[in-house]
Length: 350
Image 1 (spheres, rainbow, N blue to C red):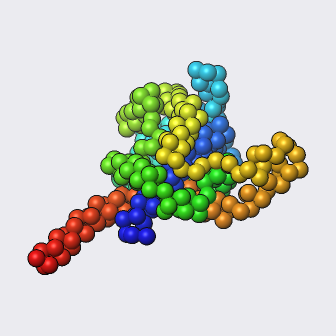
Image 2 (cartoon, rainbow, N blue to C red):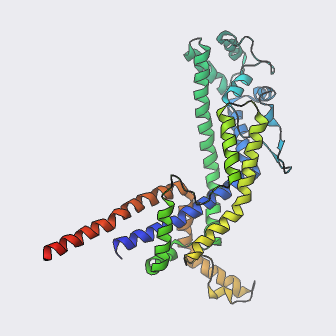
Image 3 (cartoon, rainbow, N blue to C red):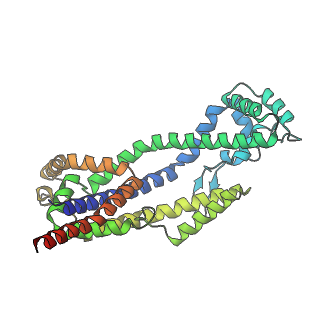
């Protein structure tokens, strides 16, 4: 196998990985949306910082009451908000029974911190107040930086939890669509037409800045833009932010099924061997013992390749997109180098 053939095989295989990684991520997000997973992790993160009594108190604050409540989308679906601004949390922490500290000064805030029951958040606020050296502006900046770190920690916990779900989704996708890495490599290395077509699609996909194999519709893009504007402006309209989050999730979920079908059709159009075609069970009587025996036999034979594919999907589309760009860049200089060698040999022989 020549170098260019090997590169084309890798381009085709990694392109398949990227597409299915995108599908797996989309399914994972759809499940998280249905289960309100992000909202639950926000509540769980706050509960780790506060005593139960203090948690109940700050949730009674006018700016945080929305976390306890449920909102309804236009379709009637209930959901919990999953976004909280640092300024709203600070306001709730430094208030008494929902009433803001008046006047908002470091002296009054220090007094409020001293009244808090012992908890991780009290220690954090005390340290930030000490570092601020009685400067309200410095204290707010320090709290904002701490809250950014807290949000990053929440995202890390959330990813660890959802990674297990993603592994299950990836394995199911590999089995359902029979994405057998070993079989795919064998097919790509021997079928020139499929290899060339898939490599061309992979190279074309790398021309963007991000993997866009599952493009957002115009409606999704508009809602995403609205959500970014609301958050960037530190909008006080919490209902609008929550509604935009839910609408975005609903639109993305609606597109999920169509996107999966479209991407599988794109791959099948190249002649890639996806799906189960084994005669050992397709010719057997449905649901008979021979049928299930054929399924089990075919699954066991393909299992190593399926596990390789499932693991590849869990690495995520950005990983494979970056790798595709590197291989495509290396491949683009390959022919030129070979041509220079041929030219030099030809000139040397004359």
